[in-house]
Image (cartoon, rainbow, N blue to C red):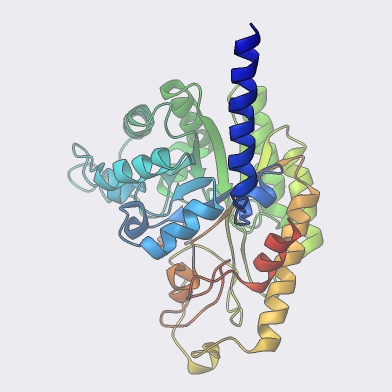
Length: 371
Ligand code: 9MR
């Protein structure tokens, strides 16, 4: 017994000496360490990133984020281009990347009017399919994709952008053929395919009152029918003069009142003059030089305003961390962003958390220094 104690003391002593002589490794501050006890902090990945080619971006992803979402590779036209053909190559790569890096993986998106494969709502003659056929196609599409990634993709944007700002339903093919019913049906099919997966309704301009009222009604109705709806995704595509923060806050609370959580799912803030507030990819405008005022770099005064607004929004998310369970940026560095090409092609925008040199923006730096 005595000799065992001596041995233990020697081991402990050696361990102590080893610790004492080695300088403590200082963990680099990261967004996930600063925010990890509040909500998941996520980012969307394009295929250069999820395939591992864009290593500069991946250093940021691995250090700062604990959740990833597919920017494009799970959308219908990519993953299910023809009725009897799926193409899972890019989606498989994305999910593998997420798993290898311990990320909370989000699938985006199952039912959406945009980037919908052309075959989806028509028959061989190009005529609109019947409600029964469309239901069957939705079921097959959703079950095949969700089942493939069962237990690996932890949450799905089940229905994307189905409601307009005034609260009416978007006149998509899904709505025209099936009416409102297409939304609960999509949630039902997704849940049947993976009962463990979280399911979300996701949309932009979610602080506009009309849209808010309809989404709240929809979520309440689905929940009262016993359907699983885990969260409402407020995309969070912002500009320098919208959304109004008070309305945004009211919306967070309104969505949370359904009992679902709230997620900021596609966060970015354009630093350019606002020409419209939509994120619907077909709402484009012609290029004019005056609308691309910072082709070299962002002037300090604009950068300060941008950082102050982003910081204020981050503080709002932190304030409501009891109901917000994820904040996801829509891209890693400014050069990735869809905003460089939308709503006007060829502009240079500065909407993300990291700049074109992969450096954190001032408000991110400040956040990191707080820890
Ligand atoms: O960022 C995406 C961009 O690369 C695509 O070209 C575009 C095409 O529809 O979709 C962008 O992502 C959208 C997201 O899937 C849904 N909400 C709006 C986003 C910006 O359009």
